Length: 200
Image (cartoon, rainbow, N blue to C red):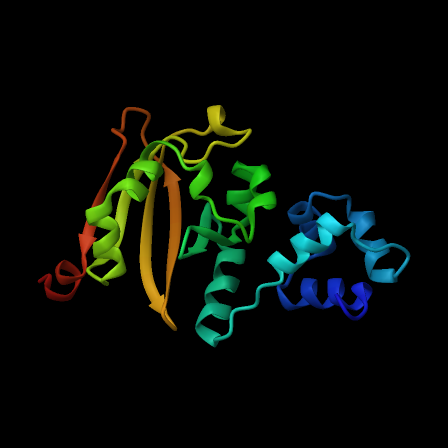
């Protein structure tokens, strides 16, 4: 990268409204490390530089900037991904607290670690074609854990609504979840765009 990492790190942090402590959580380093980077006393490793480039994806429009900001401030587990693939773009603090290892997956495709209901959704060819054609507005899911990460076994039941929208030819998925009753049955149910447009 051309330029000054000290300036890059600080601009990234301020642009996304992150404290040094919050950025340290996302990067998986100590807060003093972020402080040293910003003072120019040290610079990120090659691996950390790649992560910063991934994290540094900046939405081009005010719509996506606003959405990213709302996810950052969301009090519930929430994630923004985009296709092709299932590239993780943004996580809320509760989502990161629920599954801290996800900091390593920002900017990466989640499909290879999908399991359970999410794997079923991705493997459902009819559903995926309907989403790609703009026929599906959202999915309502009940899941236990949908990603094979270190926290997999400790994830409880969640009811998550996944909303799909197109922006500049790209499909984005905005997923927000809340704890579900322990006896809830896992699965997913699509909400067709026609049902939204013509209901009532």
